Image (cartoon, rainbow over all chains, first blue to last red; front, side, top):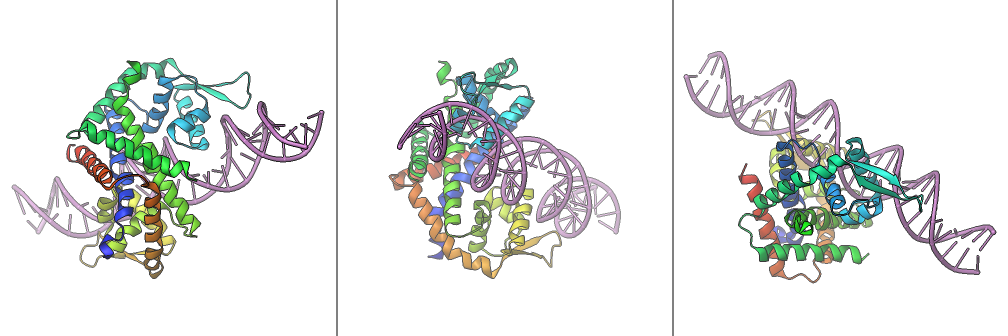
Amino acid sequence: MANNQFKRGELYSVINAMAAAAIARRMQKNFRAAGLEITIEQWSILYHLWKEDGLNQQQLCDKTFRDKPSITRLIDNLAKLGLVERKASETDKRVNYIFLSTIAKNLQDQTIEIANQTMDEALVGITKNEIETVKNVLQKVYDNLTTNP
Amino acid sequence: MANNQFKRGELYSVINAMAAAAIARRMQKNFRAAGLEITIEQWSILYHLWKEDGLNQQQLCDKTFRDKPSITRLIDNLAKLGLVERKASETDKRVNYIFLSTIAKNLQDQTIEIANQTMDEALVGITKNEIETVKNVLQKVYDNLTTNP
DNA sequence: CCATAATAGTTGTTTATGCAACTATTCAAA
DNA sequence: TTTGAATAGTTGCATAAACAACTATTATGG
């Protein structure tokens, strides 16, 4: 009995501590092996800017599931590295738009390759259906915890 | 085309940033709502000690998928809070065994309830089969990235 | 128009993570 | 038995997270 008490809690433990962290570490390692000195968190910001340059910080919060202070500091660090630049909105003085530098734009192709290679390593022996299920379940979990207050 | 380039990378983004973080935040919030001043990371250590008291730090590394410095500091903080105590092994002077305090032992029942309640909130509308698939896939991902160097 | 609410972003503090480099102890092989 | 490898744990440093409290600006309702 006592052994089964945490069955549900255990799922948290599995999801949070294991696969996600392992993928992040491997992605980071593969970046470093390619001579890329960016963190996986910084990459996740660039990823959204490659899809749509000039997002503001609030939009980056929404897309990366981070809070505003986290984005402020990630942008600080990316700016220090010369990868992005803040540009104040002309029409709304509260807003910063974030733009990629040329260097950052040139990183896209290289990191696409590494990200895909990493996911290939991670997903060996897993079917498309299983991946679909995982994505759907994690989306549901997220929705359950965010739409409900 | 360009829109599909990150399809695989996107899975990382989904797994890592979204569901896991949402569960952790909700668990933390539910702890606080119950007046429990422990972090979700500290809880994950206690969780393994409740199942088996007197683990050493290396065993906690293996069970929680953290490195040694992380465990050192988590144990430091738990010790400061009076929740665990280090006891040096008599037979191997390199080893510390970690034991729960009475206070920590008494936290078990309260936090079981909260952990299970949190997972119930998270898993609304998700079937047992789907949960099994997620657990298996994430285990495979972990194995893929750790058994292969 | 003005007071108040909402929004965008920043700063401070605490906690946690990863990696590298380190000490201390034990093991193992010549 | 001694030298070198392996193991357990700690410390330093940089990055990142959550939360609270803050400033500045814009939107809204009387």
